[in-house]
Amino acid sequence: MLSLENFKNKLSKEGSVSWKPSYDVENFWCFEIEATAEEIWTYVSDTSRVNREAGFLGRDKKEIDGETEVKTKMLGLEQIWIEKPWTWIFAKTINSVRIYKKGMAESVHSVFHIEPVKEKNICRVYIYFGWEVKNIFWRFFISVTSSSVKARFASVFGKVGAYLAGHKGDFSGRALKGKPVVLPEGKKRRLEELLVALTNKTGNADLAKKLGNFIATGDDFDLESIRALKLAKEWNENPRDVIVTCLHATRIGLINISWNVVCPHCRGPRFTAESLGDIPTESSCGSCNLEFTTAEPDVIEIVFKVNSSVREVSEVMYCAAEPAKKSHIKIHQVIAPGKKFEFVTSFNPGYYRARVANTPHSMVYQIVDGAEDVSANVFEEDLDEQSAISPSSVLVLKNNSSSPLDFSFEELQWNKFILRPAQIFLIPEFKELFSSEYLNSSVRLDLGEQTILFTDIVGSTKFYEKVGDAKAFAEVRAHFQEIFAEIKKQEGAVVKTIGDAVMATFPSLQNAFDAACAIQKRFPQGRQDLSIRVRISIHKGTVIAVQLNTGIDYFGTVVNSGAKIQSLAGAGEIASASKYFDELKTRSDASIPYKAADKPQSEVSYGFPVCVISVS
Image (cartoon, rainbow, N blue to C red):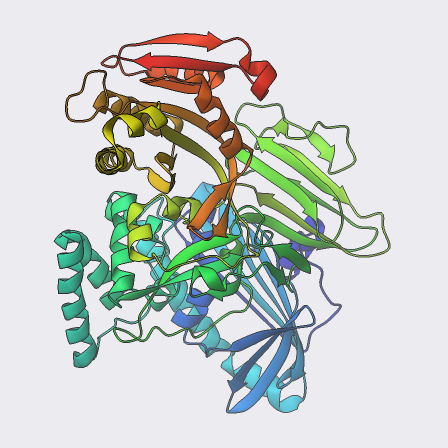
């Protein structure tokens, strides 16, 4: 076990913590837990849960000129401080400093450090507080309450250790669930009534029951922002079914939908819109000193919140800047002028970015198991962009400037449970239940890569002349219903109809292709009740969503190209870029025979080779 002196020397040598020459009062404790550093980090990094479990008071915070000001009370006296940016190393060290504007201290320096002890198969969690106090009263107060605070932390980490002993590899944070919730009778009756209504709307009593139980008994922290995709994972349910259940629950007043604008750097919510129309064109993050637009990728997340008529969810804050809220940032360090910081890239395989705030310095690395061990200076070595490195590589950042460097090493992959507009727009029930929703005319939402399908009636002019307007209208409407049914079967959504044509979007190329083949099988040559034949085109690429008179519409090169290549297809045919048919060859449906024909002039006309298949 480390002494206080050895503890300070170790962290100083690693470059993760800088210490003042002396402090008025120092607290230093150590707790042993039989678990891995990664398992313990789930709790150490989530200081809000730790502080709540320890019985510490809640607090308020606000951003002032790029700084975080925090307020609370101690012995009934107001405490106000500036929370300096926290620094941390994943599964290892957290370092924070408060500078008091009012209250018990001039400053307090806090450090949480996890030290694996391999020979004992345990980890030691060290907790340090260094105080510069205002006067002798507060020096005395901190000294005499030290044993009480230590006991609180001992209780918290005792619960964590007991839980992890029986739940190896569990990163859920369930060891600290907060106090049990008992709904008042009035709200309990309201919840029961709404669950009956929800079951009637969806026909899924099991999902309604799961959602009701989560709302009634869930932790306030988990209910602040409900992620439908996370619930689907935990409940082992189809994600689409959970999203649809949440949408219906919103319409009956059980939960509310929120459109969060998130910072692309720290990924924290910067603005919460209650409807699509409230999404702003621009936003900013004071903490990251960043301005951004909502047209950028991945800046909108859809979450749900419990309606207050059912349960009042406490939004008391117990910590101002814990790393758990920025879990993609594996390392955050402020490197002083003339100093260097060295770290091992011991993270899961994937893409990571080394970045210095407020500078153009950025470098992407791909961590790959079995790749070459690299020892290099960040930004200075002649490494290719997205260089492949091993999890045991060593990177060094030297600060040769005259100012501190705010350095982050962050995972580029976003949380897999984030629900994006592109995903929710794919669900027909959203369009049905939220038909009045609209985008601000100046807002452009980046929906990322989408697969777009177009259908069109072949020879529509002659068809109308032959059967007459009244019968043609009836047949066109009937053909729409059949097309819509096949689109829905393949988890697609209708974007719009244009005359007698349909534009739809799908979650994958395979879904679009399967829908196209099924649609063509519905309109064969010689069908007696409908004389309509259709042509189809499929294309894939990035799109943006905008508001037009007809509702939310999709724009982009993929939309224009997809519509144009349709002219290459005839009745019963599907046109698409040759590369997409090549992509599908590994899993084409053998029950749908087709012949393929390349269009040699297509590359000249459209910029890429097009292939047309005929479905029989």
